[in-house]
Image 1 (cartoon, rainbow, N blue to C red):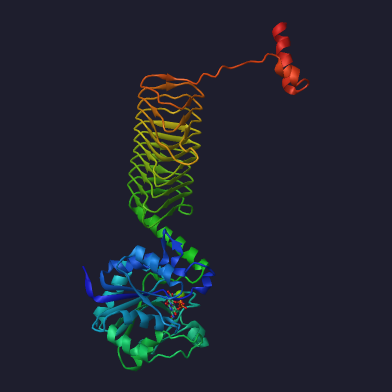
Image 2 (tube, rainbow, N blue to C red):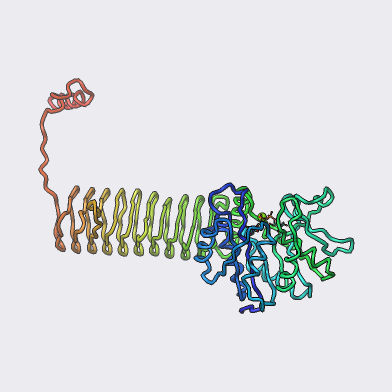
Length: 478
Ligand code: UD1
Ligand code: MG
C-alpha cells in the first residue's frame, strides 16, 4: 500500500575511492544487479511518495543506470561540500517544503538491506515515538564503521566515525548502518547547523543525531537481528564477500522451494531468476538475468544461462546460452553454444559442438553434432547431419533458410542461404545446397571422385604411407 508519508533518500554521490575503479561504486554488480539496483528495489517495495537518489561523482552514469532501473526516480545533485550530511541536504532540497513526513535515508552501497528489513525499521520507528531512529548492528570486527555511543542509561548520544573515535570508542562493537529515519523538518533544521570539523573535513549526516540528542529529542537506535544485511561495500573484498553471502541466501531460498543444488559453492543464481520444483542444478551452473527453468529440468554441470527459458524436464549439459528458449524434454549439449533467438522445440536436440543463432528448431528435430545453424527454421522431426553449416552470411547481408519437416540430411552439408528445403527431403553426404529442394527429393552434389592409382607410392616414395601402401599391395599379391 502506498505510504504517502514517507520519502526515501538514497546517498550515492561518494567517489568510492576504495573500489579503485573507473566505474562508479554503486554500479558494481552482485547477483545480477548493480549495488544501486538492490537498494532501489528495496526502496520501491515500501511504495513511498518519493524515492530520491543523490548523485555527484560520475553523475551521468549513475543517473542513467538508476533511471533504467526505476523510471520514477528523482535525482538530486550534491553540492561541493563533501560528506553524507551534505548529500542528505541535497536530497531533502528536492522534496517540497510542505513535505513534512518521515524521511528514510539509506546508502547506495548497502545492497543486502531488503524491503522487509526497511519496512520493519520504519514501522518500529513509528511505533517508538522517537524523533529519529538509526539502524545499528553489532559486529565482532567493527573497524571502519561509525560507532554508536550510548549513555550509561543506554540511550544513544552520538555516532562517532572510526577516524574520529577515541581508543575507548573504538572498542564499541555497535555500529551505524548508515540507515536512518528523520522527520523532514527536524532534519532540515539539524543539517543547517552542522560543520565539517572532523578528520575527513566532511559534513557528517551522523552529526544530525547528536544535534537532536542535544536538543533533548528522543532518538532510538534499533539493533538489526541479521547484521549481515547492513554490511556496506567499500572495496572489492567486501563486494565479493557480500556477493557470496547474497548468493547463498538465494540458493537456500530455492532449495527450500524444492530445487536440488549439488554444490552451493560453484552455483550462482541472480535475484531475477525463476526456478520450478524438482529442478536439479549441477556444479558450475550460473543462472543469470531473466532466466526461467521449469519443473524437473536438469542444468549443468558447467553451464551458463543468460535470459534463457528452459522447459519442463529438459536437460542442458555444459552449455552457454544467451536469450534462448529450450522446449520441454529437449536435450542440449554437452558443449553447445546457443546465441540469441535460438528456439528449440519440445523433445528437440542441440548436441555437441553445435552453435545456433536466430534459429527455430521444431518439435523433435535434431542438430546433434558439430554444426552451425544461423537465421534458419528447421521443421518438426528433421535430423540435420553431423558437421552441417547453415551459410547465412554473404559477406554483406544475412539470409534465412528454411528446412521443412521430417527432413534427413547427410553429413557435412552446406546450406547456402537463402534456400528452401521441402518436407521429407533427403540429402547425400557433403552436399552443398545452393538452390531450393522440392519436397521428397534427394539432393546430392555429384563431384566425381578420381582415384589416381599408385600416386603415393610414386610421389611420396619412402614415406610411411608409401610403405604401408606397398605392404598392402604385397599382401594382396600373395
Ligand atoms: C558511513 C557513516 C558511518 C557508517 C557507514 C555505514 C557517515 C559520516 N558515516 O561511513 O557512520 O558506519 O556509512 O556503511 O555518514 N556519500 C555521498 N556523498 C558524500 C559521501 C558519501 O553521497 O559526500 C554516499 C556514498 O556514495 C555512500 C554513502 O554515502 O553510498 C556512504 O558513504 P561512505 O563514504 O561509504 O561512508 P562510510 O565511510 O562508509
Ligand atoms: Mg560506506
